[in-house]
Image 1 (cartoon, rainbow, N blue to C red):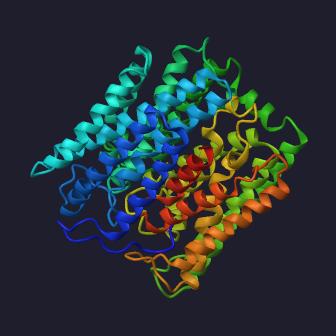
Image 2 (cartoon, helix red, strand yellow):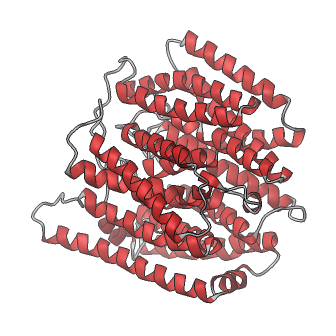
Image 3 (cartoon, rainbow, N blue to C red):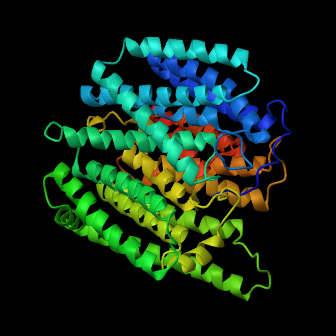
Length: 538
């Protein structure tokens, strides 16, 4: 969710605009910070990737402005190739460092594979952009070739044969998902968002296949397998129904009954057996035992149920106001949309403090519910399809320009990724001291507090605008201040957090992410928590 409409796109052939350059400057600052903290051959690869991604982003922007892109991408935003290209490589680097410090060689190699996979997917996207650009951008091709040569050479001497095959498998899945999902879902993503989202889905799918084939040797907890199976199951379900409803009308009662029956068949006949194979126990019994294992979990579940009810009441109240409004195009104001950010913050903080495993599983279940309801809305499945379309249309903004409504799913992902991504075996020996102790709170700080406060204060009190944008200096400054106050409150209420006087790094990290929020036109609900997570982990 955003607080302002982005400025109009420059004319075709125009040079890089100020906001794009400012966004690139923030990303380069993050890359250089990670490079200085890690300083190995992989960080040099990340630096080379950032340089070539910056050059290729200009070509992508030209393609978007001229309407020559192969697929229909989201309008009113730049390509976002640079910030998206750096997420997986930087995440892999910091994961490798933390797992190496914790003495866990398995997840240290896993971090290297994550970094290599991110670089391979980003290089493929760059080659795709250059291949369809006319006239041929000679300088950009030369820079991309040099950067790609350096990355391939270093990875050739760093990865084992099995790891190289794994990277190539992810790349192959990514290619097919691009062709399928970008065709089925026009205008839902920018090139950068497609790179980030589809790259992550490809990696998750490959990990699930790998662990399913080597289940005896698999390293992972039931909670991690539950997340992998749910994500892959929901994506495959969406692809199945999208293909099916090309040939039949999804809005009839017959199609709706078929949808619900096939969902049950896929869930009970594919997803549950798959999960049973991985965790070696009945998934439903395991889930029930897990959720009600302790008294604390029962209290948390009851509290979260109240918050979910409150969120539903906000939706119904805003729609009641629209019904009484004379304007047929009445939209919920920015502050009303940010109510959900406050509710999510109130949901996640107790979970992080008292039971992170429960929050891990509950967020996974919530993601499955969100995606399923979006399928019901998108396909107009009776009896709730048209009702959901009416209720959620009130909260649309310019970033929901495609057939899907994704901002609420991105909000959930942004809050949950810091909980899902950090390997627990790498956090059991005190390796998350200092600023790293705030890693689970990255989504709460960046989106729940920072983006919300910036939006409210920027839209109501802001007067000094950042050059080339409608975001305000006052909004950014109050965002940084609110996040630092939140850090102080976390220190008070979470006894497990010990910052070890790393306040300067925390302030710098929060400031960099807040500046990125001011200038980026990408989905900030997803991008900002990932960058704050990377900086805090370093």
